[in-house]
Length: 596
Ligand code: ADP
Ligand code: MG
Image 1 (cartoon, rainbow, N blue to C red):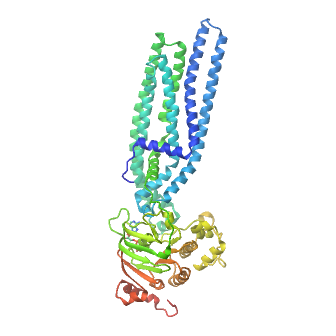
Image 2: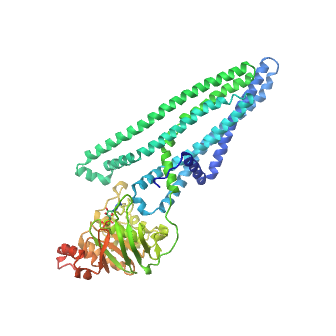
């Protein structure tokens, strides 16, 4: 996706196409209104000419003034109709913007669902995705602008051109002199801002990040206690200056070009007036025609000026975002086969290798493991040994770079993610703390069954959260920002586990969600967990070997590879990594009163 180039024209065509797909009826009405409005303007000039001609003749006494009534009436009617079309067009513009936002957002989220999770580890991808989200409104506004340009401005130029040509073939030159600079100036603007967007994206990402560090509740404690505020403030400030300089540099160029083109427009207006004057003096066109066109000339140049300086700077600046939106829509999704799990066949990773985007080293290399039906597996190993990566492969969240992962008979390479995630549950290290009620925090994992209060309560009990005697109940909002309370780190972890357990699953993964819970409590939670997952497949990552001991089998990882597999006793009988780890930790497990 990164390297693909889209030409300007292609982006415009795709933008309009997508907008038409979103609200076809409304777009057609908009086009018709723009078309009629433009035609109305030209007809109005013709009606004006007719009126002036009649008045001129009447003034010479060759005709009765009552003859003027009809042309005057026509002019009034045409003007009214044209004005109504204009009003309706802009009313419709707003309707379309509002309606499309929802539709296009929904479409984007549907698309995002079908991206693979490993893509979200890619900084470039995340950047495009963020910009794509911001491209929703510009998509609509740009399309409307383009359509207006063709069906209003275009139709006006053609019809006016035909009318002028009819009077004197050289006169349409007037239009060109006005139109070409306006057109060029817009093209330069759009291109200039697209370049700006592209060049400033990495800077903006940095800027937003520092801003977040300085403001966000999540960071504030650390920036205060560690005294890092000043440091981040400096970084923030430096980025801001760089960003502003970049903007200034490009905007300067745009403004200079625009001013040059502006002067060309004024010269054009002078030449046009001269041409008209000569044609009238030589009797080539009537005085009525001169008056009408002279009046229209201001109108023509007004319209061109509007196109030229119309505040579409919003669209201009966002054209990069629209481009990103289109790239996201156009990019390949995961293969979309459907399928249903059969976990009686277990979960099989065969010679799996995995490499993170932007990294050179394999995070996993040649890993093969099978989790049998109903088995409870623990994965142990040092930090960075590949445990988290492996469970993401086993749950189909990441697809192997090499080798295959067959999850309950489904190959994660060819089955669409939403089928893979069926009946799989997981609690990861970076679980979420939803700023919602306690009940929602649990039940969000299984929105299909709605809020089953009894089930929520019993799941909470399983992880040691008792809502009966606590000050918190199911409706407590878990966020001070939304008028509720916050939980402790350990309570949040229990809650995350409850969320994982609440879902209907046949395969569940827990990636160290108990680091903030003390070892005794952790052991209690896992003992309960073992009971709950009795006939299901379960994988648990833990640092505490007292927990690993509960598992049917333990997988030992080191440096992206599986170095040993077996029961606790088997692994202890061999002198290896596991035994070393056990010896180092056994001091924790010496207490006689606790049975591990
Ligand atoms: P563990 O869970 O055992 O601590 P991980 O599976 O998280 O280990 O990481 C394995 C290796 O992959 C490490 O070398 C780590 O630096 C790398 N890694 C993990 N996550 C990412 C990521 N999002 N992008 C790049 N490299 C990563
Ligand atoms: Mg990990």
